[in-house]
Image 1 (cartoon, rainbow, N blue to C red):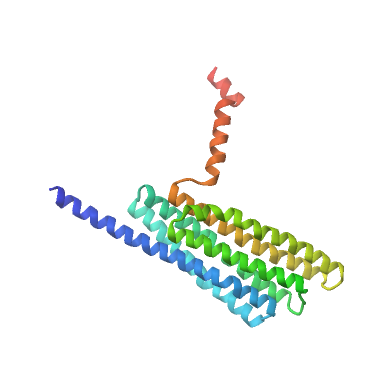
Image 2 (tube, rainbow, N blue to C red; image 1 turned 135 degrees about the vertical axis):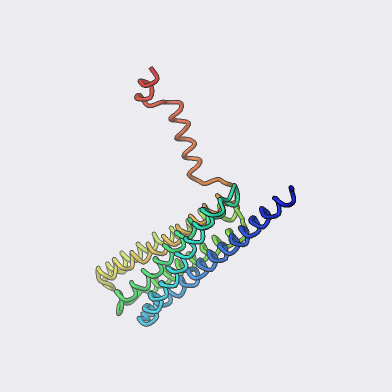
Length: 250
């Protein structure tokens, strides 16, 4: 009797893990599309490639479709399989990462759209160099984030926040370079604003990579950075109850 009832359950679990592996592959493929698009978007921007910009913008439809499929797949696993513990964290992680990756793709598309808005503008050597560095750094952070996910490497995932400091510093340098270039009359105000936005797009891509790292830590350990803050808030609330709580107790 035990073997008869246990065998179907084993089949269910095996089928679930096959579905979970497929979900992971979909997330990795989605992230790969974004990682490859970052240097491509940069090349388009710096080269003033309007045709390339349009092609990249149109390719976002594929990413949107894949994002929708991942979301539906994850929700189906949650509702039909009712996973427990680490399996549940794996599905939730894929679902949340999907949102981070899709928004990162949108930021790359914003870079392509900026190419159209800035068509004909010239980039100073310093601005061009910093843009190239920000692009490389954003793509590097994304590759590390996905490596951490594939390997289940919580240490690498946790290190992403410190790695992102480099991209933040580059963006500050970029803003300074924009001010200097505009002050020298090399670019007009509209181009200056567009450049500042472009720097912000790269910085936000890095932020999304860090968020993915947080998700990987949650998947592996069950811990999220905000858990520490939440625990402190709970402790403060318990040690210093709200006046309303005291009146209710009395």
